[in-house]
Length: 326
Image 1: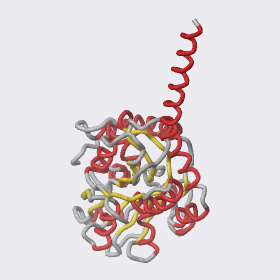
Image 2: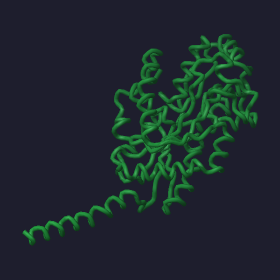
Image 3: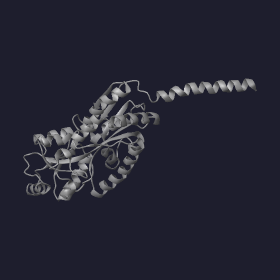
């Protein structure tokens, strides 16, 4: 009996020795971390990734690189992260509103948003800015509507891609104004900004972080902003609600996700590092400069948000009859 007990104790000790490092290793970073941004450089997601990347690198002691994988309203980059190794070294940073709309818009989606991706944490909320090329003689929603009605077929609204949140918002706004405009999808907010600045497209509804600088510099004419209050950096721009525009609560919700195979321990570690970064005064100031605000919280908070908004936007898409290619 004594011999059997001794052997059992040895076996239990061996298991504890093997098991302890495994749990610890699951939370450690051993190689370069990639932050995949599923849009072209220069947009809101890209700006945030390049703000957060160096901070995360310093915290974990590993190189952090930003990799742009634009296309299909963010689905190409999201798919790459969903299919990556579940070791926490490949992350996705994007407008998660696009993830919330994807299941309803893309019947042939190559990944399951809620199973193949694991929410790490929300990063920020940024209101949308409705702006036009200066050649468009409009400074208010009414003037924009009047111009569109008097010049049918002349206005094109630039979006971040078919099915992106700003695409859906542009459909809601046009419907509310009783106008029609051509929707032109680009590979992210940066490309959409360039199109409006050049006059290739005339209208944009896009995240303030990426678009507000062009309004304040005079390269675009601001019309209105979404959100509950005016942006401190552009107090003269009324809110959608003040202007009677639809989709007044729309905006860009930016978050970080990992592969759905990532361990809970690694998700927890990533979230902890993210919360520290979001609490840094320089990070908060940089985001606030562009009209945004940080959105700290747990991975579970983000998971609940995503699930709720998949249902909410699914109903909006169905009721509005929004279809990919529309």
